[in-house]
Image (cartoon, rainbow, N blue to C red; front, side, top):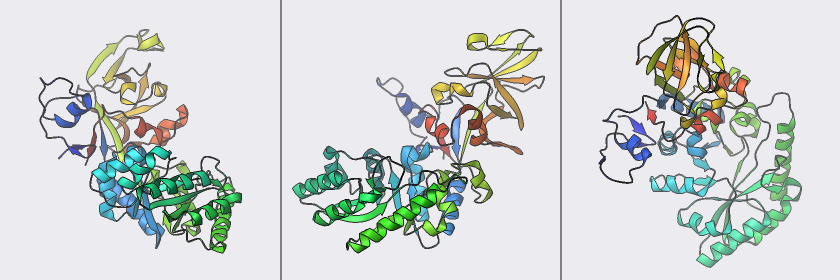
Length: 400
C-alpha cells in the first residue's frame, strides 16, 4: 500500500469541506489523479544501510539520527523501520520531532540534540525525552525545572571539542561536570561531542577532536562522574574511526545511503534510499533559434523536442539546478534547459521521441544508469543532505 509520511494513502476526504489543506489532499486522496511526481523511498535500502552500520559498530549501540524529517525521507515511517531493526536510540534536532515519535507510539529513547530553552523543559519531561546540557547554565536550569516538577531529567552532556557550535568547551568541561554532580534532579544519561571534519581525508582535525574528547572522559572519571553513554561519531566518523565508536555511534545521512564526501563510498558501500520520480506531461517541437523558459536564457541551436516535467522549485527542486542537472528518460541522460520554474521544468530530448507519460528520474536509478545526489550537487554548490530535505509537502514519499 502506498504511504506518505507514514500515513496510508487510501483514506477518503470530502472535497466540499472548507479549509482542507494541500497536505491532506496529497496524503488522503490517492484514489483521485494527482501530479505524477513523488519520492520513492526504498525500505530495503534503509534496512541494508542500517545493518551495514550495525555490523561496523560491533558491540556499540546505534543512535539512528532522524532529524529534519529523517533527512527528508519521512520521520515516522523511517523511525518505525529503524526501531524494528533494533535502533537503541533516536537522535532528533528539536523537541517537536521527539514529541512526534512519542505520539507515534515509539518508546525507544530519544535525544534532542538541539539547544533547549527553559520554557521547554517541562515538555521534555512530559514526553520522556533526553535533553542536551551544553553549559553550566543549561544544566542548572534543567535541574531547577525538574526539581519544581518533582521529577528527574535525563540529560546528555555536550562537549565542544573544536566545532564551536554548542557545548561546554573541552578545556573547561570540569566546570560542567562539577555542576552535574550538584544537580540532584538530573540523571546523566550520556556525554557527547561532534566531529567537524570527519569526512575530510586531508585533515587531521577529527583525530585532534577524538583525542580531546578522550581527555575530557578521563577528567570526568577523575572527578567521579558517571557519564553514561559516550558517543562521538557521525556517519563519516563511524566509517573512518572505528576506535572512536565508544559506547554508541550516531549515523544520520549514511542511514539513507548518502555520504558527507563521495570518496567514502569507496570504503563503505551504502544504497541510496530515495529516488525523485516524475513523468513527461507535455511534448513540444521547438525550432532553431527559439528560446525556452523565463528570461529566454536557453536557445535551441537546432530543431529539437522539448519535454515538460511537473517538477519545480515549488516542490523543492532548486532553481539553481537550471542548466546543471541531467535527468534520466528511457535509461538515457538528457539536460534540463532554461530556468527551472515553480511547478515545471523543461528537458531537451534532441531528436529522440517519447510519449507523454514516459517516466523521468530526477535522481536515482533507471535502467543501467544512476544520477546520484553528489553528481547533481557538485556544479551548484549544494550537498546531498540538502536536496531531500528541500522537497516540500507537495511531493509524497512513497515507501516501497
